[in-house]
Structure formats: C-alpha cells, structure tokens
Image 1 (cartoon, rainbow, N blue to C red):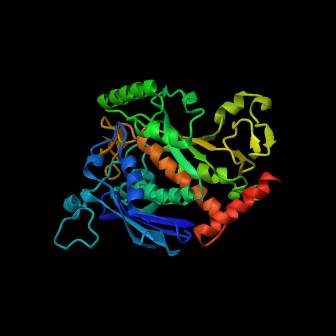
Image 2: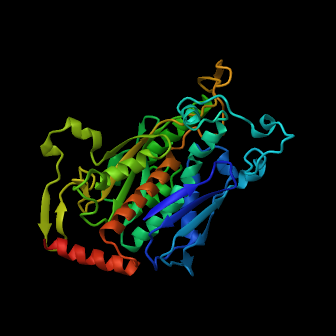
Image 3: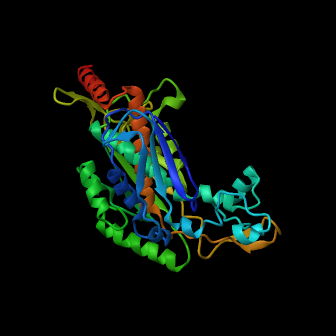
Length: 393
C-alpha cells in the first residue's frame, strides 16, 4: 500500500491517490468526512477553519460502496480558492501585468517555518511557493488517507484513536484511560473541546490557549495514539527499515511541527531499572501469550506484541505568531517582523487527529505486507490462521 498527496494551501483542491487497497473493503465518503470534521475542530483553531468545510469526493477505485482493487482517488475542494484565483493561478501571467501586484510575494520568512530553507533549496524568491505546500493544510489529505486506513483496520477488528495528553504545560491524568477501551476513550475525547479525557485538565488547557491567544503567542503539547487489536508479529527485526515502531516514529515526526516521539513509558525508561521496564510474559488457554504490563507500548524488536500500540508525539508551538518574531527580508537583507499568515494559537487537538490517522496508515500498510491478500476476505482468513497458530506456539 502506498499513497501520494498533492495540492497547495490556497490552491483549487487537495488530492490523494492510494494504491494497494484490497478489494471488497467497505468505504464511503461519509466515514472520511467525519474524520475531516474532527481535524477542523478543537479549541484554539483559527479563522481558516470557519472558511473551509472539508468534505471529500471519492473519484476512483470504489464502486457501490466497496473498493475494487484499483487505485482510490480522493479530492477535497478548497472553498477559499475563489479569493486566491489570481494569486495562485495555474496559467502564466499576461505580459502586461506586474507580477508583484498579483502574486502577493512573500519575502519575509517566519522563524520556525520552512520558508527560508525551502526558498534556498528550490530557488524561490517568492516564499509563498514554499509556505503554500509546507502548510499544515496538507494534513487534510493525510487524515483522509488515514480514514481509509481506519476502515481497513476496522474490517480486521483493529481500532485506533487519539487524545490530547498535554497542552502548554498542563498535563492530563493519564491514569484515567486505564481500563477503558479504545472506543470509550474516543467517545470521551471527541466530546471534549480539546480532545482530552481529563475534564479538570481540559479546563486548564483552554485557559492556557486563551492566555496564549491574548498575548499574540502560540503553545504546543503532547498527543497520544492507541491502536488496539493488532496481531503480534507485524513489522520485523531483520532490517532497520522494516521495524514498525520506527516507521510509526517517522510518520509522527513527518506531521507539521512534531519534534519528538515515544512509545509506552517512553523517556521515563531512562530513569528506571530494567526490572520496572520490561513486560513479563504469560500464557493462558483463553488468550494465549500476553504481557502482564505494556511498558514498551506494544513493541519488541520492531514488531508488535499483540498488546495495544501506545505512541505519543510532541508538537512545538505553531511558528506563525500574531506578535511575530524578528526576521530578515530576503530582498533587502534588512531586519523585519516576520510575515503573518492566518493561523491558530494552538492546534494540538487537531494534531491529535492527524497523528491518529498517520499511525493508522502505517499499521494498515504493515498488516497488508505481513498478511498480504488482494481481497479483504483473504486478509481476514490469513490473520485468523496466524492468530490460531501463535496462540499455541
């Protein structure tokens, strides 16, 4: 399974093409749109979310609600395109038009964004060519693709969800998720303004967001993704690039503004002895092999253990500030306050939704590689046979 996305933040549309999905997987635009709506929600979002109402159109690869084994094409129209048709037009500008009057050229890079380095790399004197694609708007299609992956996983009995663990130094009580199913965590988080399962921490998080907005500042946080029902043995130890936890880690830091990843106890492991870190193994006739704890977050040797996958990612504060930091104009080399584009004071809740979907994709892809079949029925059969085998191993 693989996919590509295309499209600019203020271009006419965003596009994704997914290849390698099995046939006969139930898939509708409605299920994808529910996840797109979640990405646009969450306390602290900016005005762009009021302009765009993201809905997907499935234009290939699905017939009468089921995949046919062909590439699946997804498109999301940018409603704001009507205000940017001249600035972001596809066709060459007429010779009698001053490009600078039309293009709204950007020459002042924002600290912390891709503007300056991207301009250097691709030779752009107009940094809008960089920020239009490096914008987090691109994550719209990664959520759409991940939503398809979640439909794939759900058909195999695997559930995925995410919630916010921390915003601006305010930490949720993570013990509140203990004993709850993935579906229960999803229900609680979805009903909260910041997608947090701790009501007391949620109120403090909202206050932190309000304080940052009032100060013209931005704040970051930590999100957690949980995958339940994944079979053991997905991924591999035989090569570095086949370890599933490394692929998930790479996918997490590929999300705009994400700067760190941990599994299970994560960095806390550095402060604990091995006897308090490693998960003891037990076997019962009912469940087969399982771990008594899940400190390693569902992984050993780059492979799933059959325990829930638990992964967290840290998101830095958004670099676009309404009280901008100092920068340098690339034309004059004079100091200026950095350019301001529409932005959020905090996008951590939305980022939790993006994280959920990039993890879902990596897990779905790895399962497809491990239990390969061209049909969803064949995958179910292959997984069922492996589970029966591993239970008695």
